[in-house]
Amino acid sequence: MPGSFHLSVQTPKHSFFDDDARQIIIEAEDGQIGILPGHQPMVVSMVEGLLRIQRKDGSWREAAVSSGFATVLQDEIDVLLQTAEWAEDIDAARARENIRLANESLRQQKSIQEYHMARTMLARAMVRLRITSRANHD
Image (cartoon, rainbow, N blue to C red; front, side):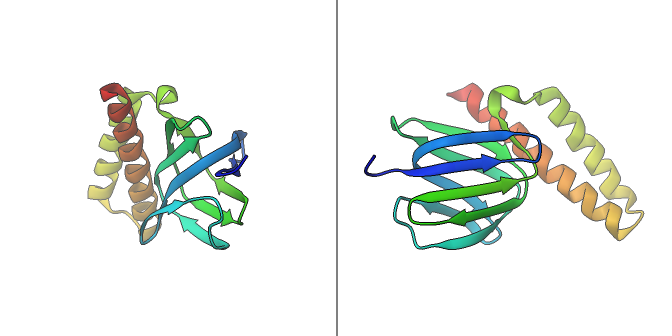
């Protein structure tokens, strides 16, 4: 189909998305990157944030994702992530509790490793909560 590319989004647990898409927007270390068909080949390091997918029919779908990598070819994009969740699969109350726990852990600052783990937990919970609130406003 002209104007599209094959998009595969995989996590260690499952194939999250495997279909043609018109466009994706990913969160990279230095900001968001929009990728259209025929994009220059590259490998992108992704951070916790939103993955926005424009499907073949033009509609958009958003997911909360963890860190990972995207490999971009002209007609194919492969995304490998630790986790990916659609808004409707996220428990907002659990995300709020994870934010509280991560903030408490950051205040305690026991070790540098625990600090980084708490920051990652906080970032993931905030993205999860952000995507559920966006889905509820649509």
